[in-house]
Each structure stands twice: as C-alpha cells, then as structure tokens.
Image (tube, rainbow, N blue to C red; front, side, top):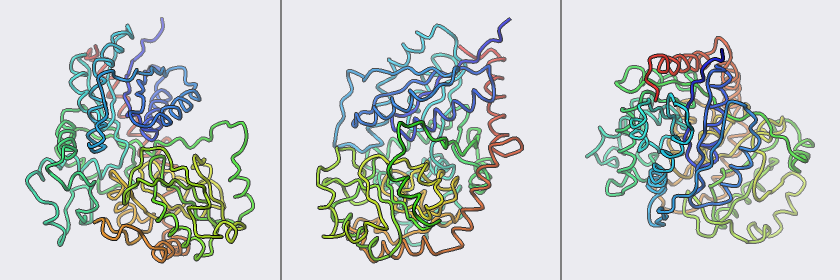
Length: 474
C-alpha cells in the first residue's frame, strides 16, 4: 500500500530572492521526508517582467519529483499605484491573489496539510483558516528583524526619532539601534507602508510557526530572545541558499578573468537584482576603485531616476558604459579590473579563491552566501530592511565592515574617499576575514546530522506530520 502523501502549499513573493530560498526550503523538506509533496504557487512580478522571466528560468532547472509549480495569472483587478511604497504595493498585490489561490488549491483535488507563505503574505492566514489548515511564514530575512516586526505593535505611538540619542532597544539585538537603520516607512507613522508593517507584525502571532532562514550560531541572541518571548514557535533552519551552480551553456567571461587573479585579491561589487546607483555615484565608486589599487569585479546597475540608497524597478538606463565613469577609467584599470552590466553569477564569483571581498547591498540571501563562502563584506545597504541587516553583520556578527553612509538623505552621494577607505578596510582587516572564515565553517556544519539547523528541520517535519496525523488537514 502506497504511503499517503502530506501535501503542502508554498506561496512565495515574486522577488527572485524570495522564490529561490522558498524553493530551496521546499526541496529540503522533501529530502527529509519522502512523504512530503509540495505545490509552489508562483506570482508574476508586478512591476518588472524581466524578473518573472528569471523566475521561470530558475524553476525550469528544478527536477524534484515531489515539487510541482503552478504559475498564477496576473490578477485582472490589480493596478500598481506608483505613489505607494513598495511594502504597501507587495502586500496589496499578494492580497489580490486570494481568489486565484483559493481556486487553485481547490483544483488540486487533494487535501492539503499546511500553507507556508511569505512574510508579506499574512493576509493569506484567513485563507488557511478557510481550508482548516495551519499557516506558517517562511521568513526570508534574519531572526533579529523578525523580532523587530513582532515587537513593532508595542512601539506604536512612539516617535522613533526621539530615541536617536540613546538608541532604540530591539529585544532580538544585543546592541542599541539608530532609528535611521529601520526601514524608511517605519519612521513615518502616517505612511500606509508603516500600517502594513504593523499589520504583518500583529498577524505573525496568529501563525502556527515562523520558519526563519537563519541559524542559531549566527544569531544566538535573537534565538534566545524569540524562545523566551510570547511569540509563535520559531524554526531556525538556515542557511537556505542555492549554493549549487546551475548548468550553463558556457562559463561566464568573468570567471575566466578571475582565474588569472591572485588569491583574495579581488573585491566584488554587486547590489542585487533591484539595487541601483546614480550616474554620479557610479563615478565616485570608479574613482575609489582606481585609487585603492585592488583588483575588482563590478556588476554595474545604474539608473537616472534612482534615489539616494535607492531601489530601482525601472528599466536600466541606456547610457554607454564608458559615459558612467571618469574619462579613461576603463583603459587605466583594464588589467586589474572588470566591469559588467547585467546579470552575473554571484555564487560562483563568491566561491572563487580570487575573490577577497564583497561590497553588498546587505540583502539577507547575499549575506548568507558571503558567510557560506567565507568572503568578508563591505556593507552598503540600500532599501527595505538592509540597513538593519548591516547593523547585525557589522556590529553583532562581525563578518562585515561598514562605511559612513548618510541614512538621513543629506549629502546624497558617498564620496570616493569614503568608498576607498571602506574597500581598504575590507581587504586589509584580518580580524573580519578570520571571523567570516569561522562562520563559514559553522554555516556548513549546522545543516548536517548533529547540527542545529538539521535538528530544527526535523522538529518542523515532525510538527507538520503531527498536524496531518491529528486530522487537522483539509
């Protein structure tokens, strides 16, 4: 008699970082229990079609027999309001999928045991209630930020900027936080994006559990704080990252260039799939790279509409590469540097022995990859919770160094002298390199038998199976 399957539904946000880590989590659960079968509902990106294409390409590379993908159509009644903040748009966009998701689950024609959603998807908790199944969130950021979101309702009525002098105490951080390191919408309580952060923070307490893409050893303070708090159960199962290179028709040209560079000699600059700098900022970065003397590999993304520490969802500017830099920059640095526009194989670059430093926007997936491959990081946060992440990795974990960045928005551009200082510190500070090397070893051990994350995944599987056995599935 065939063993009955335990069917789970995963609902990631449409961003690549969310989709990849969610699918990797799904594969891990299927690996740990052959009884688990997972359906992943993917949403089309609401503002950037090229990201939808990247998602489709990634999904086509997945061959797990127990994972099925269903591409949801774009909701006919949803329209992006460009005046709204990103957190508002994504929350409303996901909410608009409820009828589509409900119908798609009914079309599965099999009972489901749980719905696992994204951190901006808590409007779907009521949908899980309709099906009589528990709801979990797969939290694709750090456990420390989860603690902030859970605690946010208790801060309501408080002006965060009043805490700037003494610092803001967040239970999951062992250091005081400059309020300007919070996501920008949290500083404006009249903003609807702030209300959405509040909403999600309140709804987390209605969940059966939160699955966090982090591990106890990298966030021990947050782990202890969350365990002691009256919060939903937390499963720290990370690092969940796609560290296996995908098969490609040919090796990327930058990899051949890296092959010819000395060990730990190259600084890699990359600000994620949605981060961009202005043309003026690009010139300052170029001057810093020329002045520091180190080898560099720079994934350039420039847009003329990008704001300070900005998020760009528009098409890339069509400016010629040479016009972005000081005159003669490419010629003068051609032997020790390489500039690329567009997609680059970040994991493969970080894994290469020539890569000695990583200037990053502090997206959580990128931080986990930097730790996994043992590459010290230079924190240049841009949007969302990345400023918060930067505090964690520089002041608490010690795997990154910081720069003097004007979070208040005055001054606009980080000058070449400060960028160069940061690069030199990154490449020359042996303490950070030693620390990230230690954490790299830890990150590779926690997911194997005997490791903390291995045990957390086992605990999660047991709970999901228990829900099924107790007859609580739809």
